Length: 300
Image 1 (tube, rainbow, N blue to C red):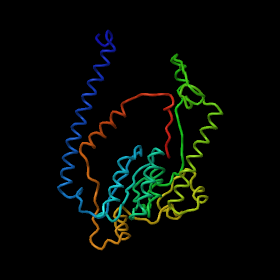
Image 2: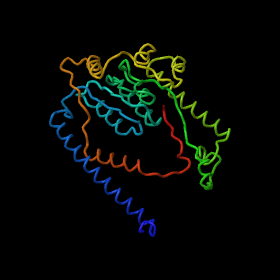
Image 3: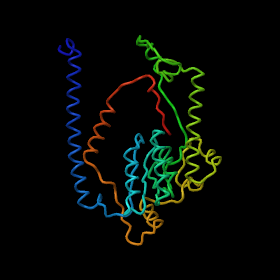
Image 4: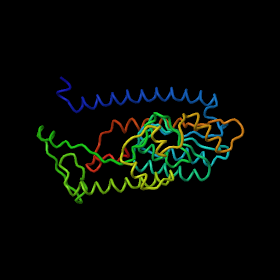
């Protein structure tokens, strides 16, 4: 059989075929998305005729560049009187969440910015929301989860069973901390616990500052548990109950908009959309790894 005689060539051909199928799939999605974007532009959804800017934060928060750009553009646009940040996210990376938080804090001193919490706005999602002027959530919204977690997977026993052993050459004591091929030491556990505690306090202090709550009070609420929107209201973690439309109306009211309140979404760049989609898919299928990359630092 060809696959047995030339396993490497066979594998390469299979991967090449999968890559071609992937590219064709991306092209199809891009064509459909371009068509949808064109229709939206014609219908006015992405026109510049609105007065309340809408920024959507959905899914895992892994990057801040696009969202910061949207917030900044709405902040600097004189025709936009207020901004609504629609959040439907379980959280994500600490760095991106902090960067977006900072941009929101910078914005709320210039024009009203309201957070509208969807089905889930927890952890990094709440981190960002806490920086807005007001937070609106549904009674059943899942929010809170104020905390930090560092986790990794240990595959040491599996390697032993299949007869593999790892050889690690490192430049420093902690370079392979969290290695999946060995047990973690007590010293390393203490180091990581201190790291988590420091990041957790950053979260607590920022959320307390954004909400105008004493940091000690916020710390008691920040044990990682999740809250419903109803409970969050009672704990002063949000300001009122309501849906997305209520958030838009509140933004318009605070901004003093006398005429019709018209939401406007960021202009969608077709090429940027295609580039981001391609990079995301390639990233998902690209399995690489330095040992030091085994950790997932997430706000969760």
